Length: 147
Image 1: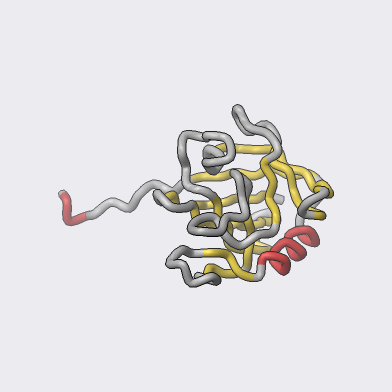
Image 2: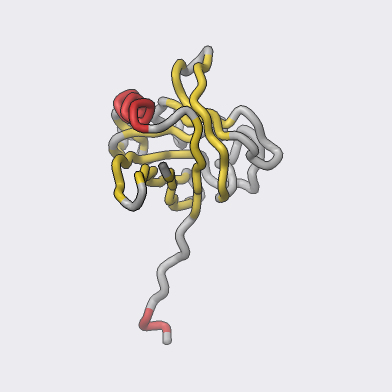
């Protein structure tokens, strides 16, 4: 299994898509939402792009979820249920939230992830106990008219 999160950084939040591949075939995908990237500041920033070891755990607070190991200068980074990463209500302090779709659930003008519990349950079914996660921020598109 190969797991990849491709994400888009903004000053308010980080949105992304999580893809699960078996060999070269995509077997699952869902949406992700995180805090904005603020130089990897604990409790205020999403984690840097990179390659991470991940394992299934049972959290006292979130139940069955995943922990992302070996994050530089950070610990206790989870992939867990939640909806909000910006605005007046926030469900993360640097963790990755999953959902089936983006929506402005609380109508505060910010994207949220919806159907988070469903997305997590599907991830728990599809993913093994341990896997490698690649997180990357795509290069910005090049305006061909600029040349």
